[in-house]
Length: 403
Length: 136
Image (tube, rainbow over all chains, first blue to last red; front, side, top):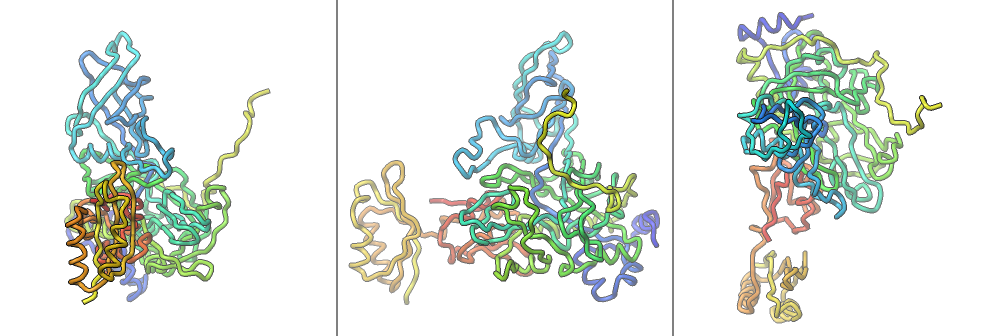
């Protein structure tokens, strides 16, 4: 058994053996997990795909005279920001839309500009229009504000994503006879295509499937800079069925991540427009996994044939919250470009960019090899498969506290 | 040599109600496949069409269209993948009905083969980066 301290010592001295998860699959296939655990110190992972539960919080600094935006209104390039915080602190979510956006009234809507686009504009160094109102107080007398701001001038700009890196998400298909528009893209009728969103063998949480190393405080690659795992993500669902290697067979874990927006790069942070669905933010994340024992080596090197994802019908089962699964397919099949569903061969495509995931895993590998990125020991683990935590649905009911 | 020539035609208002294409194809003995046809808001006509026939004859026919004041543009320059915006996710590959979009086996980057494109435009809708651009 190795420890993170030992591995960090090796990193500082430039001796650490660092491989990407793609390389690890080959190593474990050729040498077995025992040898791999001895020889390899760190496995790097990467992913770049739409992650809707992403946001930024900002502090603009005070104007003269001061304004209380908290409890008032705030628009950035016409997109509403959330103002329930202090005077000049606001939150902007990736999926927020300008009030004039037609949405799906002219179905399917295009969703060409929203919160994610403002976030990308800020990261690209563009000037962004800030329009705010406050109800006015003695200490904050100003009631209106209109100015351009730039990422380099404002105080804090923090990327905070309540749910990213969804472990093992659904493969979506459409069995109805009309085209549907979903967060997993356009789905053609009668099993016309199948869409998934995963970096497969490079996927961070699929390489540490039981969350033995990734936890609160884990240092990660986030959009071109260093970030951290802040908490478990919303809908974190560790107690699903798993394979003997520990791979979940259904959507499982998620993480919340945090980092300094000012250090990020638009190469790894891009706004997305999903027709008929909405705006989202593509986030680039890479997580290093310390190979502490044989089981971690085995999990980092599990081949795609042994990783399984559920195929779900998004025309009726998904919207009606029917838990039915049409098939389980392996990631080897998904990445071959065609999967078999009920005897039919269906073309399979990803919304997550594999070339970008490769680039992230390689970049993180280079950072670690150069000695400038040390692994952190998680301060608290993510809730695991023994925690009893399950992703529940919402029951619509009356208030229990009324007489 | 038999060629398939894909063109985008713009018909001025005064030609919209004339049987320009059927007269042309009958005169020159060409086969044709109309991929798109619409009357635009200013009452111009827009047509995306593939002519199949002997190369020399197809070009003669296209010249006759130009002489009739029909605007002409070959399809290659009309649908492009903007590689500055494309993140190579590959979702378009699953939508393309004619294999014009596919993944390079090694790099898994998305390649656009404009020769195979039939201008159905589903990739334009489906691309989440809006990286596929239509110029007609």
